[in-house]
Length: 414
Image 1 (cartoon, rainbow, N blue to C red):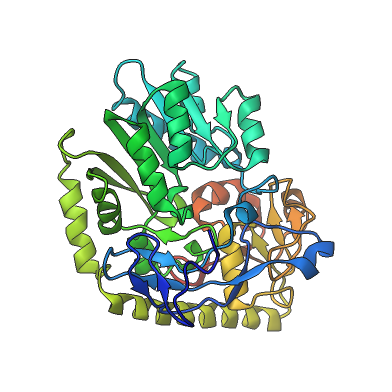
Image 2: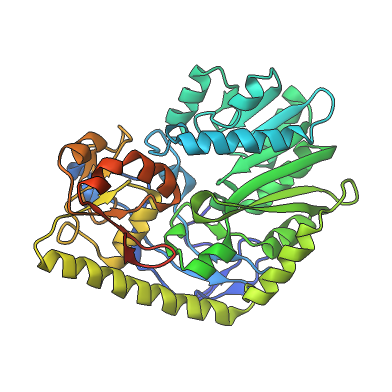
C-alpha cells in the first residue's frame, strides 16, 4: 500500500472503498506517526506525512487520502496497550456478552487487532475457540503470555483462507477500533466473506463520524484512522459483498463510537435502530459535502481558541502540563503548534512512553507519579475520553486547586 494512495494528479486521489475521484477538503499539515513516542536521538529521522481528509460522494466515506505504510504504525514499538484501562476492560466484557448472544454450536471467534488480549480473554475464560490477529508483536506477545491464541499478522483474504483451513469458519468476526485503521478495507471484507459461517455475524465498533462532526473532535483524525465510518458508509461497504447492517448501537468510548453488527443478507432480523440512525445521519448532513467545509472552519476556530487560552495562562506565569500522551494528543499538539513553549510536559502511566517525547512537537513524557509529586496549575486533558476514570483518580489534584483544560465538547477550564 502506497502512502500516496493511487494519486491521480497534484490534488486528486482515489477513494479507498469505491475508487471514485477525491479531492481533500482540508489539510492538518505535516503529521508524524501518532503513536511513535521517540527518543531525542530519533528526532532527525522522524517520519512525517501530509494529513488530508476527504469525503466521497459516491460511498459516503470520510477518509484520509494518504496513510503511512502499516509496518510504520503497527510494529514492535507500538505504544498502546488496551489492558491499561479498567474502563475499557469492563467495556469489552460487555461487548463480549453481546457477541455471545449470537454464537451457534461449536463457536469460533476471530478478532483482528486483538492487542493484548483484553477482549478475547472473555472468550478464552469460557473455553470458547478463538483466534486473535495482531500485527504489533510487542502487544501480541502480552496476549500470548496470558494464554490467548494469537497470530502476529495482518488480516486479509489470504490469511482468512489459511484460518479456515486450520480452524474452520468463524461464528463471529469482531474488532474494536481497528477497522478504521485499514486502507485496504475491501480485502478485509473479502476475507470476512471467506471466513464467516453462513449464519455468522460481524461485530465491530469505531469512533463515529457523526460524533466527530457534531463535537468537532478532530483529534480522532490521525495516521491510524484511515476512515471515520458512518452507518451509510458501512452499509455501502458491506452491501458490495451481499451483507447488511442488522444493528447499530452508539457507544460512549473514544469520545463517541458506534457498534456495527452485520450479517449475510436475509439471515438475521434487522433492528429498527438501523433505519433510525440512517435517517439521523441524513438530518445531520453526513452525506452533504458542505458539512465538511463547515467542519474545516470549526477545526480552525477551535485551534485558535485553544492556543489563545494556553498563551493567556502562560502570560500569568502559571504552569501547564498535558495529561495522557495519546494518539489524539499527537493530532492536537501538531495541528495547533503546541510545544514546550506552552506545555511543560505530558504525564502518562504507560511505561513504554515515559522518558520519551511526543511525536512531532517533542514535548517530554513524564511518569504519572511525577504528576502527583508536583502538580501543575493547569493540566490539558488529552485523555478526555476517559474523563470519569481520570477525575475519580485525580481528586487530590482538584482539591489542591488544580484546573483541567478540556476541549471537548467545548474549550473550557473546569
